[in-house]
Image (cartoon, rainbow, N blue to C red; front, top):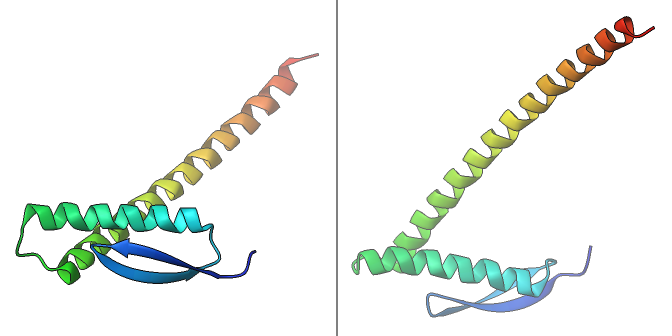
Length: 98
């Protein structure tokens, strides 16, 4: 793990200094995505403040995260089911071969 580095990003016209041990370009891409999401919300309704747009983006990202966790859990269950099926197939093949 590398040492934390401060990366300056601009979100909705505001400068932020983000301290992270992640690659600075990665941090900038995250900031750009956040900026685009906030601006999309604010362009849809000019009365939405930065703070409200930021909260809406957080809810969207949390929902996306929960959906992805559920998907990962479901995929893990499917992998286990397939592994069990493969084990049964191998056992039955061993019983058939001379």
